[in-house]
Image 1 (cartoon, helix red, strand yellow):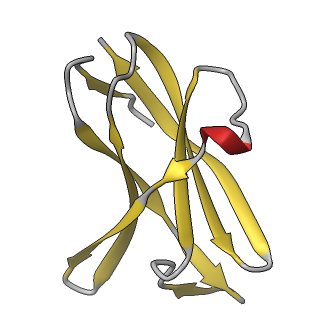
Image 2 (cartoon, helix red, strand yellow; image 1 turned 45 degrees about the horizontal axis):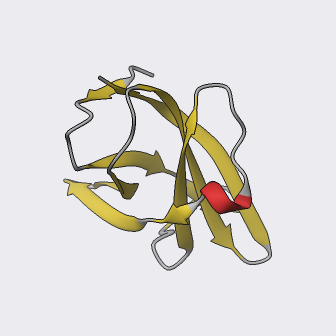
Length: 103
């Protein structure tokens, strides 16, 4: 995945695609709780690192993409791993989604 590069002065949504299935069938995850963490590259997130995120739905013809999104604010210059956590009781899924580079 190509890293997203932003200025340290930016306030922008960082977006991560989320695909959810039940029994192999695609489902809409937007009723689930979603959080995101921006951690220094190589660091594992703790519970305290995950901050509330929101959902964005993009429809293009018959295809629907679900995106978790969180504002990136006040990040120091550096390289961050972007983690997404989705809670769909009884499951809690955490996945590394990509890399954010702040310059």
